Length: 282
Length: 248
Image 1: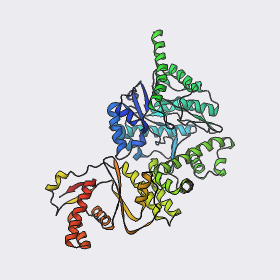
Image 2: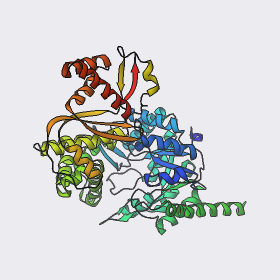
Image 3: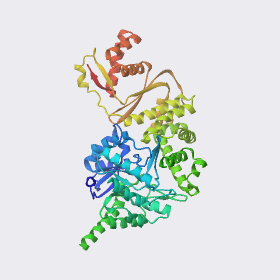
């Protein structure tokens, strides 16, 4: 199943409405774009029209926030069917969501809430992933979220949970390097141990973003450039993973496209340096 | 149990009570506060983005108070955040029962948002008109068409705010009519119509028969004026892209 998701798709950006015109009217030097799935899971109108036009020019990855793969009361089949229809229509490069939950008993928080890393949660998440992959007809990618709370009674680390989840379900991974940094800082964890612990061969995509300092914790705000510490962690990740499709996420304080492309060129340089080292070693 | 933990988390987000927070231990306070802030901030942002002119019309403080009341009484249920805005006009109506202008303004903004992402439909081609048997014709309205009674000058208020002009005071209309919203192409439209056109739109939505529409208008206006009115309305609706199909 895993061969479905391409191993390396280059470098991309999150498509945001502030840059629609750039992507439709100019030749933006990216290899793919990523959109928030739910923004386009609508019946019609301009959003779907723009997505179809963008798709004519660039491969498109779908990144969702509402699958709620960790919900104890299961998944929403109507949501999955709509997502499948969109993914089929645009021949999505990847379909991803988060290792988190949002919904319980009909309540939907619209936030990426943390999962306890227990055997019970692992069984539940794996059952939900298997169902989602059946409906979607493809292996999905799941992203490590930023977290602000660690539950007592965890049976394993986050990376052990992710490794077991991927091994059991065949799902692929979207590694958010900023989220590793935020969670590791917030919980006093070793970010390098996280990178070492995840199954490198299952990582198909990497997210990079900025964060901000809250009153007591780092917050994953996507409103600033990628910081030096996260670039360093990204370089370490690439040295372990090899070339992985990488993109910059910016959801607030969105700058002109040129600034994001400049940031993306740093990722290209880091990925390129890895390739040069590989070639020299060979 | 995972389900119990998730229900406790929901209780914390919805109530922000000390009792709910204590279930996660004293060390969880800072993290819980972040999730609480994310939850409420996201819902406030959703309402602000969905009702920009209502926000301007009410003023920042009153809008924020209404948004908080809505969030406290209406936890979100749908997978799409877009759906969260749909019940806000009802909350405003409950808080401000004597402000029909505000209620109609909120309806306008919600209807325009719904039309923006509603089903696509091509307006009826004018080339087909010559071939239609009007006695048997059943007209199909665009699926994005929404309507409601109009009792105030909310349309005038919305238009002024949208054009960043000073909005007029809210007043009652001398004669009640209707508000209609629809999308043609990628542009959403708002129109205030008089009572007879509003009744005609409702009639056509229930029974697409053009002959029946002529009959209804003839009953209201007399035979000649009724048929003439039906023709004039049809021309306007065709020109505006409200009619998307016809079956003989």
